[in-house]
Amino acid sequence: MSVRRSLAWAYSGQITSFAIQFATSVIIARILSPHEMGIYAIAMAVQGIIWIFTNFGIGAYIVREVDLKRETLDTAFTINAILSFILAGLLLGASFGGKLLFGDPAAANVLRVSAVSVLIPIFAFRASVMMQREMRFKEGSMIGTATGIIGSLSTISFALLGASYMSPAYGALVGNVVSTLAVVVLIREHFSTRISFAEWRRLSVFGMQMVSVGGVSDAAARLSDVVLGRMLGVTALGFYSRASNLSGLIYTQVYGTATRVAFVQLSKSFRETGELRAMFLRSFSMITACLWPFLIGLAVLSRPAIHILYGGKWVPAAVPLSLLMVAQFFTLCFGMNWELFVLREETARQTKYEVIRSLLGLAVFSIGCLISIEAAAVGRVVDSFIGFLFYYPHVRRLARTEPHEIPLIYRSSALLTAAAVLPALVLMVVYRWSPTTPPLLVMASVGGGVALWLLTAIRLRHPLRDELLRLVTPVMPRLGAGIERLSPR
Image 1: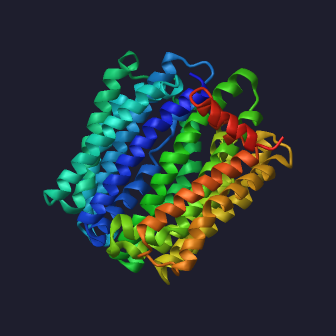
Image 2: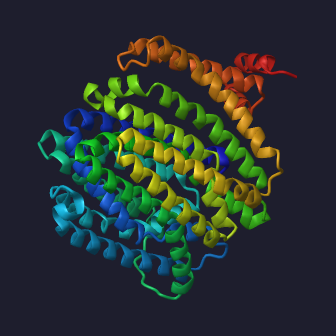
Image 3: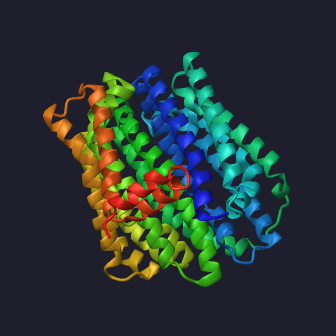
C-alpha cells in the first residue's frame, strides 16, 4: 500500500476515532465533576507508572525486523503474555494501597477493573502487530472505529447509570473485549497462541532498551500526575487532567497516526535502500506544517474553547491547556526522533538523554506544583525545550540531513502558523481573552485562519500545495488551475 493510501486509511480511522473520543470527553465532562475526573486520573497515573516497566515495545521490533521468522513471532507473543500477567498482578496489588498511594482510596477500584482489562488484548497481539507490519490500515481503521464507538457508548451509558469515576474504566474494559474479538476475526490468518522462548534474548535486550527510552519519560509524566494530585488535591488534578487528556488525545491521534505510518514506511525504505533522509524530511515538513498551526491556534483560543465544549466549571483548565499546546509545539521541533533512534539501533544512546531530561522535567514540574496547576504546566514547556536541546543535533545526524534543511522546514511551518493563528489572536485581543467570546466569532476566526493557511501554503509552494493539487485537480480541474495560478513561478 502506498504512503498516501496508508495515510488516507490511517487518518480516516483516526479522524473518526478522534471525533468519537473527543465527543465522549465532552459528554463525560458535563456529567462528571472535576473531583470525579481527578479520582480516575490519579488511578491512571499509578497504572501508567506500573505499565511502563512492563511495556517492552515488542511490536516495533516485529515491524522493523528484516527477516521475520515464525519463532520470533512466537517468542514475541510469549513475552507479551507474560508481561501482561505481571502488569495485571501489579495493578491488583497496588489497588490495596488505598489512600497511602493515591491520595483517595476510591482510585483503587479503578485499578482492579484495569487489572482484568489489560489481560484481554493478549490474544490479539500477534495479529495486531502483523496488521501494522503489512500496512493493513484499512482493517485497522475499521476495527478502531468500531471499538471507539462501542467503548464510548459504554462509557457514557455507565456514567448516566451513576457509575461515576468508574465509567471510563468500564468503558475501556468493553472496548478491549470488542477490539480483541475484531482483530482475531478479521486478521485470523495471523492468530496463534504458540509459545516459544527461541528468540528471548534478542527480544528482551530490545525490550529493555525500549523500557529505558520510553519508560523513563512516561514514568516521569505519570509520577508528575501523582505529585500534582498529592500536592494540589484531586480536584486540581481533575482540571489539569482535562487539559492533559485533550492534549494527549491530539498528540496520539493526530501526530501518533502520522508517525506510525511514517515509521512503517521508513522501516521499509531503510530495509530496502538503507536511506532515511528524503522520506524523513517530507514527513517532518508535512507534520509541522499541519500541527504547529493547530497547536498554537488552540493555545490562543483555549479559554472560549474550554467554555464552549466543557462548560464554565472547566475554565480553570484553559491556561494549562495553552501551556501544554506550547509544550507540544517544542516537542514537534524534534519530532520523529524515536523512529530514527530505533531504525539506527541507537536506543541505548537515547536512554541517557531520556533519563536526564525526565529527571529535570520532573523537578521543574514538582516545583511548579508548589505554586499552581498553571506553574506546573510551565514545567511541561521547560521539559519539551530541554528535549529540543538534547535531540535536535541527533535528529539531524540520524536522518543525515544538510545543516540548512530542517531550519528551512521550521521557517515555512512558522510562516504557516503565523498566518493561521492571526485571526484568532486578533479576536482574543479584542475580547480581552474572555472565555465567553461569542462562539460564532470563534468559528469565523478558525475559518479565516484555515483560509490564510491554505493561501500561504500555495504561495510558498509548500508540499501541502502538491498534495492539495493531487486531490482537487482530477475532480475540479478549474480549482486546480486556480491554485496553479496563485503559485509563484
